[in-house]
Amino acid sequence: MKKHILSLFLFLPFFLIGQNITNITPNQATQGSLVPLIVSGNNISFSGWSCWSNTSSLSDFRFSQWSSPYLYGIPVNSGVNTLDGDLYIPAFQPLGVYNLEVFDCGTSNWIMFANSFQINEGSWDCVNNTCIEPGTGGGTFSSQTACMVACGVTPSWNCTPNIDPSIWNCTDPGDGTGQYLSETSCNTACSANAVEEEISNLLIYPNPANNILTLDGDYTSATIYDVFGEVVLTTYFYKNTIDVAALRNGIYFVYINTNNSIIVKKITIAK
Figure: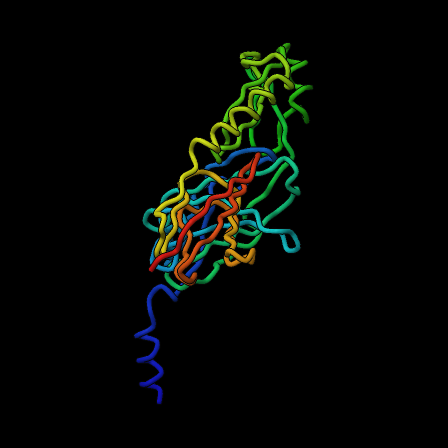
């Protein structure tokens, strides 16, 4: 009996032994920031067959407090025991300590790294007449405006895309070099850029589709309706491809939500 038990352990897949997340860099950031992250782990598959529907077949990763909704990041690249990704933290995201969870592409399980990331309130330091946010919440000034007054910097704004190129934000560089002298004029320019970007860049193919539908562009969610107006598939968060293998042959309508509008496309499923 003991020999059989020993043999069973010897033949267990190696990735099931000591499977954990070991580090995340950086381990803290501030509200309203875009953070490039590196996640390290032992015996975790950061890319693989069960993650084929994700961006470049990479692991999804997300953050949560024990009672808050998930805050998802966007995977960018994977290496040996590492996953690179970007995390956009909204300005209204609750402060405090978060758990990191990474989807293992080998076992189709979420692996948790508890109490591993912290979101801090924004703060700024005046460095060489420029307001810099250190990202740790330990800056001298609790607001960018207070920092700029102390630094003698004139407020100005630039209209720039964030992690989602279809979304444009007005940000103050903190050194007076922004293109717009008022935030109102910047917001007007940003809205025009976002709508133009969304309409010109969004493509859906192939059409007719078989098992995979590709959405080449930027969006926040997509819902597919049949000709009777019934919802047959919904996907949240940006994914380049959607699995439509379960849909029957016929005509469908895809309602695509972007930051500023809803775009409707008609597709055909033909197998």
